[in-house]
Image (cartoon, rainbow, N blue to C red; front, side):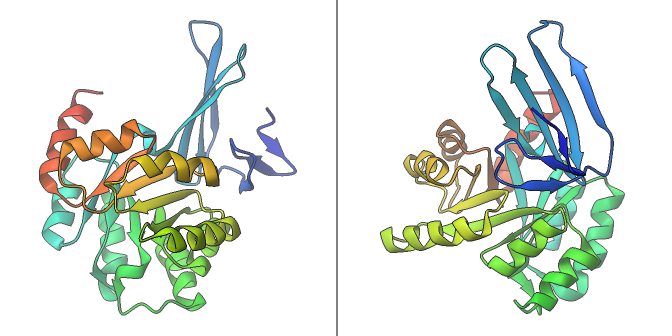
Amino acid sequence: MSLFRNGHSVDWSGRRRLPRPAESVRLERKSTGSTFCFECKLFILVYIVKKNFDGGVIIVIPFHGQKILPAARTMKQFERLLASPFEYIVLLEVHISNVKTLKQEADKRSKKLIIHADLIQGLKTDNFAADFLCNDIRPAGIISTRSNMIAKAKAKGIIAIQRMFLLDTIALEKSYSLIKQTAPDFIEMLPGVIPELIQEVQEHTGIPIINGGLIRTKQHIDDALGAGAVAVTTSDHLLWESFTKDINSGN
């Protein structure tokens, strides 16, 4: 597999080219002799890729394997996440005047901040808003339902997460059409309590799924991950705590 082509790196699925990594690529041969992994920092998006030489299987583990993406809806929750062991954290509702300060605080704690663009109070939905987030704030990732925001994030090497609502069959088909145009890095599928659709959406789009919305129990999380979601977003701090133990133990 060619890692670089004409000054660009090629992502695991071959769907599109990504900008050349800003940091070094580390190649390490495992003790088994049959696998290797490279860790490639695409700006702030980190993939760990393992390739089996015999079977040609490539496994992509996003977010450093972090299965919970804790989402803060209040300043108190945000402060709790800054003190937590989670590397990737999600910022939901915030006023536009506080966005830069919160990003700076996240940087000080070595947190990768994912911002929900549609929930920023006072921010419009036009291309100027997309430029502001991607050029001035530069979060690790952006969540949005809007195609212009997803396109700008991709162009700037920011993790682009398209929100997808499972309201009915018509909404699902419209989402498929939009996702075909935007080709985001991830799809956040809501609500998160319909695990049987995770595999269907992933197979239809070829894009990794993040699950969220109405996640109230650890069983909901386990069901989503078991159905193929790469991560689950939740604003329930009790669920954060249950997975904090796993992070602290190295699992």
